[in-house]
Length: 360
Image 1 (cartoon, rainbow, N blue to C red):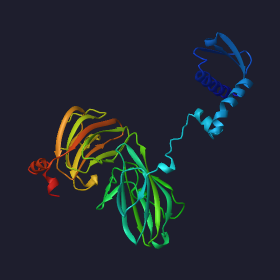
Image 2: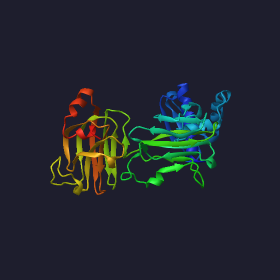
Image 3: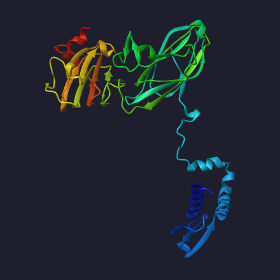
């Protein structure tokens, strides 16, 4: 009999002894013959020799009360399984109907049922900055041949703008659209590259429906984030990867950059003019009214490491901290932000740096 199984049986015997109060001090050693355990029960000043047959008998006695409670052997041995199930029980999953125009910020199961033709619908999905989103097709009852579709987009689309921009996303634009009705074997699950995703759908016939399950997963190195909140703090790290990462705040805010660390040293001033394009690694502060970072206007940029507060008030509908990384270094920037009040916004209109936000 395997050693681990003997240890499990011994553990059950030991637990029974503790419950009976007969094992305040226990000494255990393995006998010279396999299958023999010596247990010294010092509370009774004697030693008892137990073979595996005796242990099995005690185990059966221990299981008798459990049988009355309908606990199976598999459930008993699950206590010894280190890989405990972490899935949410089916009955505990959050469920609600999905609307034609919707915002989803929680995990759950969402069902859309068309009461009439719905030809232009979208659901915006958003998670925490340090998470990504997966969308699972649980049940789809639409007429793909009639022009119906259910498409997941890796990012957001608003007024023709896309986040992340094509410059900042690791996939080509056509790869970011996953249509359930595409030819070939349909994908049952789609995972985003950042904390936002979208579901586009078009349904021509009343009664057609689909059900999706939305889940959130930890992202150890978040890149390209849309903030749900107008205030908070964040640290962006790019670990020697040639990529661009943006943190988008869709509010007018005050930005406080507290730490900025690039893996190189260049003799540029902290706030440089002209910008740090020739440096290869830099952090940019952008502003504008859309979500496509390639269309936003530069406010300032940094290309030398520093520690200490740098404050900037940006009166734009969208404020973005964007890090450009060559992949040669580990780059890091920490910042906090808060919503500007109405009086601050009126004052900013006279500022010659940010006033372009009110003219575009």
